[in-house]
Length: 494
Ligand code: NAD
Image (cartoon, rainbow, N blue to C red; front, top):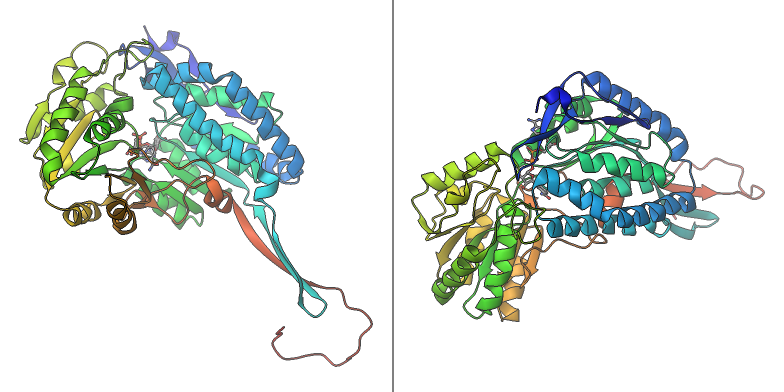
């Protein structure tokens, strides 16, 4: 079909939908067909969105906590009621299975649940009689216009890590979702309007680097939350930081699972299979490297291979499918070229599924992988799992800590002492013990270490509240009749 005949996914600016002259293609990864166009914002479109958000901030930042909380409760119900519709949009443009997409909607909605409690979360601290007749307290205020720039792999959940807390804390928001799967953000904007959020508090600008750069440079954007690949995260952190903004930029990952010989290997293999190949390996917390310790290796690889071969690959909308396609033809071709170029031991070869119009590739499993190999060093972001073999837990920890990424890390073991040693020594932001994808609940904070996060604050949970607010400390004295008329010239102490 010609691009001009397709539906265009538009920006939502100040409650009004509009497009731009330039548009970009959106595909159904299961068929390879172009299914829509998405508007690509110019710097002028971004100016308009930031202006709308700036105007809305004047009133929204003064709205009571009770009212903000009420909007979040309404939004929570609406997201729940539209969960299936949201999941279908995700599957149609991302490719993941419907069940997986429903899971992402639930995990994203949990951040709205947390934001419903904003009156408790913003309670300040009060000190009575800090000095004689002097009280002191701290409270937190919103920043202004906040921007969110998000990746393709969780088009509902990752934006939800950001905007519910930004908005509940009194900010206004401009979201630049991934251009690959933009439709879910359009529905989220409609749901916010239905929840009673005033126009201009939540805006969506679509597009690519042009829109991102305009947000990073805009003098009226106070803070930027970014989630995406490491090179872009590093760039966003530097550019927005240079423009004086508060920045949290979450990057890529290579998440390892260490398996000790004392682990329940049947359970470990099942868990790792889901974590490696679910969503076709396109999760920031996917397990992409297994470090098998000692005698765990042979029986583990045997089990992983059996599971990988049994995975049903097909369109995400087909209930029989356990794994869908990857997001674009370019992603599939990049994954294929990495697999083609590797001389490690390819135990399961999924390349024969990479034919036809859809962007499919079957599960691949490599054994005897070395740390110098590109299949280990690169974030493949596809259904490719590599197994490295080491002799001891210490060697495994050393291997993980030498990796530049530090998002998630997991250990499978029956030994509490080994797990405790691992969780304390490993340099990663999120650790799983017999849990392969340790994504923290919404009331904790999510974030990696090393090249997986640039900036100081993790997203959602208490750190999310802190990121979108700044503290003010007030010291207050209401003097009675003066007892000492002379001015005091020394530095005040209690
Ligand atoms: P990406 O970095 O290509 O894109 C992310 C966002 O940045 C998109 O909105 C995109 O339009 C924009 N962008 C892309 N290139 C840009 C450029 N040169 N200049 C300015 N903006 C640019 O990432 P992706 O492919 O959409 O998502 C996959 C990546 O995201 C993986 O690396 C994955 O690990 C990472 N990710 C990390 C986390 C985490 O929590 N750390 C979560 C989800 C995804």
